[in-house]
Image (tube, rainbow, N blue to C red):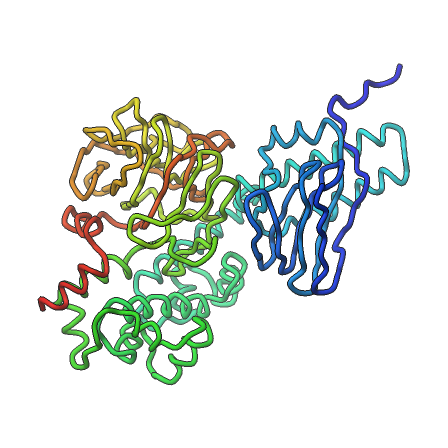
Length: 515
């Protein structure tokens, strides 16, 4: 008896693996083709999708639908992998695995793509019994693996040992970042992890893509730039505050890694530098204390003010966020940029940006453009979040929720006492106070509620913006905007949260004039 054919078949008509072309190579098919075309570009490319034409440095894919205009131009030597496919199974996979169509998506290189395509080509060449089903299964595997790369980040499919090692390295990194003035050595950092220096250095580079000292220098430079932009101190004083001993070495490193001179950053502030006792300035002025709170002490700070689509931690402590379909930049609450979510997409920071088993504070300017159930920020595991910063109109409005354990999604929460209006910016802060066993919610710098919480647990997944991961699925997508996201690995006091609400360069400048 003959076996039934695959219910949703997929056929491959053309394939290119690591195809190479010269700079300037251009494809412009105004009416597209009769089939779907998947393209992944490893190298700089100008690409047209359904929204606009943009330049990418590489690491971007697009799935063109039949009849969609296909345009791209190589901005350097081009390397790309592509496949042209058709059949009812394509649309079924797009819906099932939520693959963006006619939308450019930046993503790390899909290492699985070339090997799976070679397997499909082997099935086509041998034409063994039911080879068409084998090709369909390989194509489905490509879509499935691509979906995991998009929505589950790189913490999926790693061994327990790798997960433990990543958590250890993240813990050391956070410990070092809390004391940037210290003259750290690799031996010092390795001792924190109870590892040999050689083994520690290899593990650190494997986790973060840079050696421990290089990574530390990059973060110190970012922090020094924040001082230069926001405090009236000299370049030498700012450099010395973060452990740079010689001015000449600092200037070379700053130009090499930041792409500009330190004086350029200093010229951007609204007041001139003053020489003298920098320690007195740092310890005793209101402006310095605000700079410390706003720009130096966060465990992560996303102002969303970078040019173009980039979303980077201003302090350089975390990976850039990956933006998916439905997430763009717009003018923010504070005059710079903000992330806009249209309710269909989200953004992902690949690592867990804070230890949710300890005390922490998360705050952001949020705007919802509709009523309903939406999550702005969340961190958790594969099954549910450790915390959610949400807006749920049916439950009173803004809400800070935590779950009772890594296996139990039961939520303990505190909700705002009054609803907010669509299109209205609000400053929302959630606090987990591990010492006093409670969570608190602040709206516009004012305490709005608190409730006991006794069972915190440590999340091990990515950080989601504009949605949350529940049972391997992204849910409760945000419709609205987010600006000035900050996370702290400690409890902020009411007065500090009020400073976050009022803080900014205008207030810093006023404080400096008054002093």
